[in-house]
Image (tube, rainbow, N blue to C red; front, top):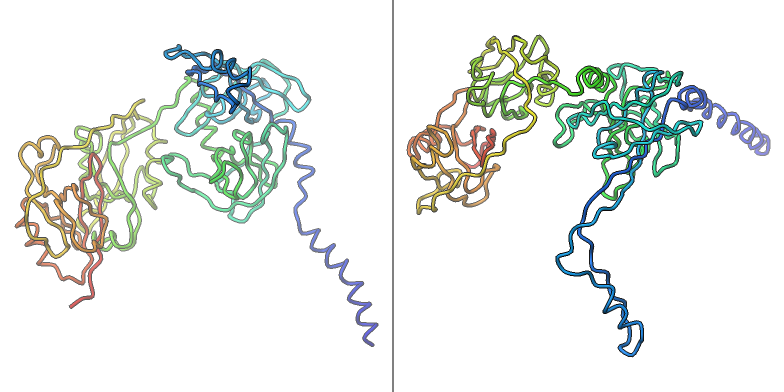
Length: 471
């Protein structure tokens, strides 16, 4: 009986393994059909740098070669910089049979010469039609015809957990295929608020940049752009630019060589649960305005600091990350409607969208007054009045200066910050004097969460301070 049961188990194991194998995706047909449209991109650029003094080998003084190294190897001080050639590798894919190719802007940035190699080993010199560093998308062109072209898909239909495939040239290995799943959607990366990245765990390494990300239908849904890595190699976190955004960028690059984006002149931050409670918002969503550009479109439209933008041009703003993308995609000069949450109620406004300037001015940090001897308030903050000179330099009418933070602070408040206002239950109380601010603070129950509007250098933000359970 025992032998019979064992025999049945041995017979069933291969069947189970076969069934499991059939559940795994087969990428072979996809690669055969779409692989020829993926290209290798190599660039050459000339750089300038000061030559470094070579390290002299450790040699005995009696060694006849020691004199040679002393006399001829060290460089002469003050020698002018020398030119040298550097090369880099990337990937791309053909979007039209007449030679238009999409890749990353950082792949072709600063290149003096761009060479595109097809899967059949033919090589072409390419020219840059245009590049957009804000989205890291570039459009290049080779003089060819009848090229294989990728199919484009809809990244909005992607689901987390869905299989995806990357093809590129990591470390120069042409048409390398890696597979994974969609790990997340609409990811925001530091300094990258115009692209809702597709996160995958498909292996992406240096050289994959600019290559396509395919869904299982063989459609390009993204451009592989970045990896998160502590070592410079693949660590399971890869990010791709959605193809719809890339195609919108390439359309503008092809027609004008540049990308035009909208702006309204506000500085925003995420609405947390604590901030939503402070402003009387039913749930945390929207983009909290913590600064309004003087004379900008937002100020002209009547948008105020502490407004929460919850809708723009008919589109709901689910989080602060979504607003720059929605505004950026709006044509400059357009007049659109928006909705803000102000003092516990929604309010409709109209704004005329301006264009994002090429460069952004960075202001300098304001001077700070000498700390004053004073008692700390219940938050452990020692405050002082701003001088007329400080108000003029900061371009603010009211505010109190944080001279010292004592004890264990329950919020991100630092010495040198300027508190502009205290917000509680949607009521915004400007900080005009230290006495007035502390009086308003003491009138609020200690167990209640409050919000401070804080200026730090040239930036402003809202900081929540949770209530204390201490009696």
